[in-house]
Length: 380
Image (tube, rainbow, N blue to C red; front, side, top):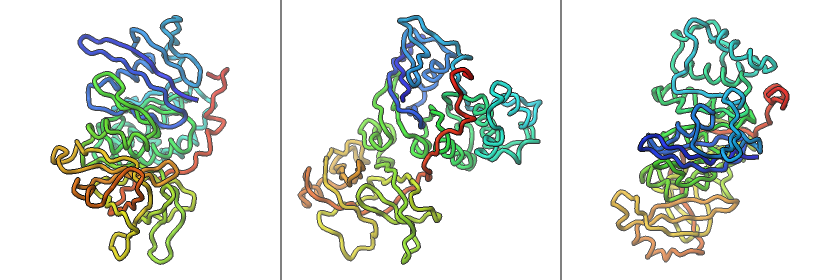
């Protein structure tokens, strides 16, 4: 099951030529600098903008094929859209805003949406009585109540301050993990992408520079150019093993190893996304002993790259990739002198010593979309 997009559009001096194939369900993040074509792309997917040519299909259902002259009308695509501004009806309270959307899909459970987004305390309020984060939660709820086959979110947190963004992000994680609705999330904030994305489409100047799973893409040199040297690092989806009795920390399985982190008590089996910044990883060619750094994971060196995005313009530093098993890799930034003195080479054993771990939220095994959220072909 996948979302396939291949569209072209010229807008005055700007040319868009975007092609990607992302698995569904999950969150596909379109990430890149302002003006690279992210919003134009999702407007074409939504049917709000007609491309010069292209093809769009969702799980083999063709929404657009310019060669065969297929172009499903926007209102028939079954797509929900959440904009930067919530666009709530100001003369209606939250309950009425939600019920207005539910008229299009009366078989959707309002109670389910209220619970997912914690909207019940807000039902009697009007838009001007809500915080920015609350308005966006209502807007997301309204989009869900239209029973979309695909949910588009165009920088939904861009107008919020940091506190309000942190308020909304956990709800978006919940939607990702507990619903089977594929989502496309547009952002130029990499921390949002890290927390939410399952698939990353990296855009530059109207084209796709690279795409892939978030773990794979966190290691891609093209991404390093955009996010800057301090944000370079591996993103890994680990699994909680349980609490460590001696330290009280939470044990998390990463690849074939494990680390201990400070986190709320979570049940064994809970998935947890972590980011290990390259600047916070030390490399050893021998099993570490008698060190204050407690987290170390064994692996094998798979690549040593010139750190061309380093603070000193790449002079004197390398990025070392260490495969720690189960499809996971860690990046470490080391000086070129250390590379020589440790005799680091592809295929050599190595231990990654992790000084700091950034937790990017946690997720749960998705139970699948409840029946009331899964429209049949007749209902669509």
